Length: 547
Image (cartoon, helix red, strand yellow):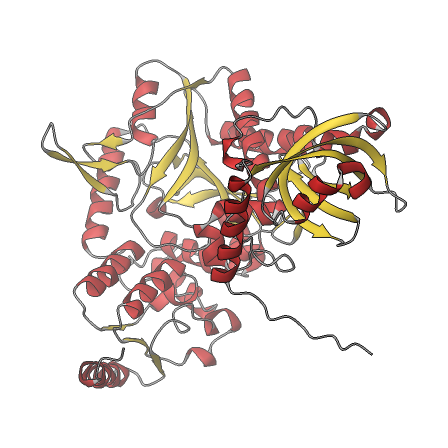
């Protein structure tokens, strides 16, 4: 009885060497695959599967990448991935000829081929192509990721997006949907009389948002310039100039932290319309999404982030006060005093940032930000934001503490933001002035991130109390990663014990990153943290270098 002996798995270098040897053999035969310049295909996998009745028995030419091969005798089955999907290729020695069949057996997963053959169904009713001619169009010298698990490492997926597209079909689908959405968006706005424009990416000032810009240098003018952090200001100038409906689909650049919801460069659409208010903007936003769902995706009911989302028109519109009352149980309409508002927020486990002004508006927003957003799974508009967090929005005529602004949420994620534009120059001046003062006082998550970036650059250990940012600031967590990656100790300190708080406040996004965490020791915790940092830094310095 013969005993099966498993073959050792080849290393990546071994696989690469074998593929190079196959290429060399092909070139020696005068069959260099890289000489091929064009292949005239006349069908794709999706078209064949969608219209099989008309394709059955006909000869077609398809082109794509070999994603799998099965069989070793006189018959092989392969999966070909083309621009539209995948289709099975049936390769038989009698059909291809012995010489070509033996060559095909040596083709590797990842090779790009052209296949000419007859469309048919196998005994298992799978639509396939019976290959008559197989042409090697390009040789893959690197193996694809594991065929059973695909490309699962997130870092690799983001850094090698092209490989991700090859092996994870749902990623390509996302790209296609994104392209269709942008096309739909343009058509929708164009039909309403909007004009699409392009505004400068390089600016002499960084304006339109509170964000840290990327800085570059213009050699001819010998001045520093900033990659735009928003398209807002030039679009508003166009409105002033008389173009009363404008929009831009533009790339934005912000030199800040990274997390699942933030990227240093991303695409936005900004639109501005004269003689309209935030209610009109809500109607437009809802219209864009609902018509796309129905007309392009085929249904108002979609699945996103593991949730079933109903985009049927008529989305709920809640004021921020109403939302906080509904999900947190605090009625800010019944509170008029700043101190009472701050106390009410604290009573439900909401803390304002240390440097934040202790006002009714900031307390309301903190309650919403920390307690409500996670509940907004179905499409919801939140309206009437406090003046403190809406420096460019017009005050509500009925309540000067609130503004005519909305944000749209789906699955707890902000999907849009708009407001009735503030056009009172004196009010605008006072708000800008207050904003500058807040920034100078460090009332900004970005300031803490900047401080941590600076510490990493200067090789300075960190003792930090993230305060209210503890529970949700992935930007701070990313900055903490940067510090740790530099080999520096980072101690997280909490004056009280987070484990004794309610469920939301028990979670820290910093703790999994930090070197250590000290809690519940009052202000003495800072002394312990400093001593720990000093000790860890000494150990780090005294450790011998290892090679």
